[in-house]
Length: 386
Image (tube, rainbow, N blue to C red):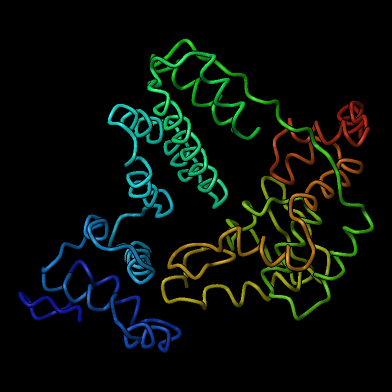
């Protein structure tokens, strides 16, 4: 399949894939993938080896999008044959072309510029920091779609976005949902920044304040369930406990590396969420030791990628949605659970230590300390005196 006809040996560009497949700890995984009909991936690899198609991302862009080709592309990127890429961002471009088709050329150009230079650019920044989530991508698509709706609404009134007035924008907002106000405000700021239209301006809604909707008794009930219910998937138990006990976000949990877990001391397990290592209570420590032994068995391309929670997609970690869906099914609402944990910790730990240990911003730590009504202003002098 991978033989280069010119040399009679494995194609030089595909050698990393060959090495990864034959050195797999689970040969049946590779055998199943190679023999499973309809064999789209193997057939495409054969074309790459013979030179019928190029070994590049461009090849995949020109082919129909489906799960088999997505998997092969991820696999080739995971083993280093192709450059790293973010598929969730790249899939927005063909979707955008479909969405903008009904618009006039001037509005199509406007929304494409806004999408690429404002919305998608923000996603790329998040991806570069390994902070891109499914929710962020869905939010970006929603933002683009609602902006397209505004442009279509203007076209029905024979108006372009460049000529739209404040009255036009307010009339549109009166006919749509409250959530559209924030989206439209972001778009009008971009219009002003780019010189497209200085006549319209909207203020964004203020961010919602921190609030706690889960009682401490409820939080501890969920903790006990995750600690002792062995029917729940291991990664769900660990992720949920990191959130309920240490106020970690699912985004941060899904991206944790195995080297953040220190098991050098047989008597304890230490986890570094940010700067300061934190000792894990038992049996959470035992769960983490078990996770380290299971890590990387799912795929021959995931064995040594360093993720604490490797995902099914080659070379990538589990998505936050894997954790979120399973926790919701258990009756645990992640947003409420994390807020409850932050509130509880803020009553017991100085905000400066909270930020260092949990990896949250100092501003956020101060906000939760204020909500918990604890004054830690004397903590630093006390610590110095000691």
